[in-house]
Amino acid sequence: MGNTIYGMLAMERGYQLDYSNRVTAMHDLLVRERKARTMVAVLRDYFRQPIDSLTLLNVGGSTGIIDNYLAGHFRSVVGVDIDAAAIEHAKKTYERDNLAFEIGDAMALRYPDNSFDVAVCSQVYEHVPDAGAMMKEIFRVLKPDGVCYFAANNRIMWKEPHYDLPLLSLVPRPLAHVYIRLAGKADYYHELHLSYWGLRRLVRSFKIHDYTGRIMRAPDKYAVEYMVRPGTAKARIAVFIAQYLYWLMPGYVWILQKMPEPVDCS
Image 1 (cartoon, rainbow, N blue to C red):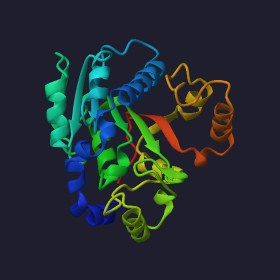
Image 2: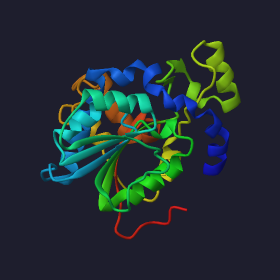
Image 3: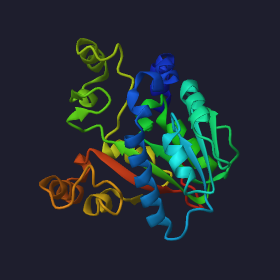
């Protein structure tokens, strides 16, 4: 399946190369730093000890906003992205002794095995021609017992977040391309979302520590109160879905642990 997806989408991959120039959200300081605050809160909770001795790789970090924030909390941070313009912007904008930016392919990372304590893969999998190849690479470069902060949208969602179109992610691919063109949003629907079950298969090499429900129950603790205000009807509905209709959650936050004895990921 992974090879089939790669073959279908590889020739269309050019859209990734200037993604930051086309998507203004990649330059939104407030939104990107909010995401970074949640990453830090979740990772601190997971490790239950200071995280300033840990090395981190941000896969698909784009313009460097998240990487710069993370560098204030980790020993070292490397942001890698295939988008050369995004990396150039990051290098010009953010300078820290413990922060580096590199152009690179998530499906073929240049780093040696067992290089990083932590990886971040946040809202990236749907943009990659072969998400399975990316997750194998993340698994490879993590140290034993290292973890990946994995945030992912669910294919089963009312409105596709990249194009603001109802049910786009659920429409069969050929029709999705027509739908997105008729809506005047793009010429081709590049993103490939997975359902909850598809995401579980994607990360099957890792042990999952699920933070989705915890975040919904304690939005203040995990810095998402701007999305889910405690005590509101929206918060109560989110907690209910997380507990009883988990496969319908619009997105998930998982800590993926690389176990010392790896699971076969072929």
